[in-house]
Length: 348
Image 1 (cartoon, rainbow, N blue to C red):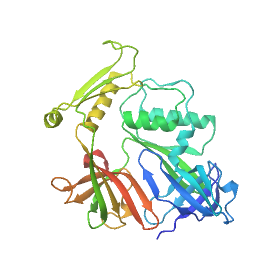
Image 2: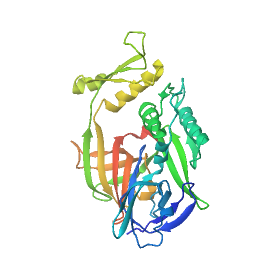
Image 3: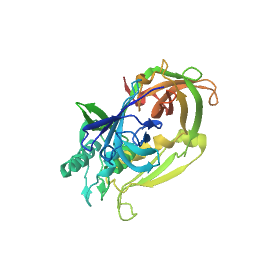
């Protein structure tokens, strides 16, 4: 059984105390906020208000090859006669607490420029002990409008869903301070073909879900006020192989933050790529066992999965790690992975 090291810091990251709570499952999610609960005896001398203020930082070291988990304390908070139970949200949550003004406009801007601009402007307004780290830009250009939009919304909707990038707020412990660094990647993760999950060896409780929807003909529209030929940009994409296999399946979407034809075409290409075939997603319980020890892979990495008894003809291919949840009580992780190819991630 792992006993994590849990540090509490103030709103500026300065470490206040090392506490010894009982932790729930510890989750990591790509491009999203995760949360944990901490339960601690009220008789513990470290249970004082200054250590558990909303916005205080938390940093958890596991010491078993898994990366540290960091974030902030925030409600809900529950009191009983004997215990205090509070909630911590991963570091991405700090982006939810800052927003643009009522009218923030970008014209033909890259995802990286948008990312750096909205964070820099938030920092200029008030400190948040967050710095900008790696920003890998992509060629696509966008012209979004934000009206009191929080930074988490911008990352998840403008940068991930439209620009097809990945963001991450990384927690670190440096000279007695819990620090956060915001990264934007063209695609987070690396190809790790030598990291192998094998059903029955280091994998148990394997479950395969083939997910839809299947859409093989997309019509999209950009920003505009009317529906005439010249009122806004339009794009159409379809996949003949998918249509031949599943029949014509149409879909449409409106993208009010896209003005440029090229950007809309790229967005439509992305939608088609994501939906022209069913998406094979797996959940599985894994152990810290070679050839896939915990320290060998992280979120976004592409690894090999061997599952000869699953699917119509068994599976031996590559999957991308989308989330993992660690249970300190049994030293195991539950992963969610999705079928992919090695060409979709950088080689480690």
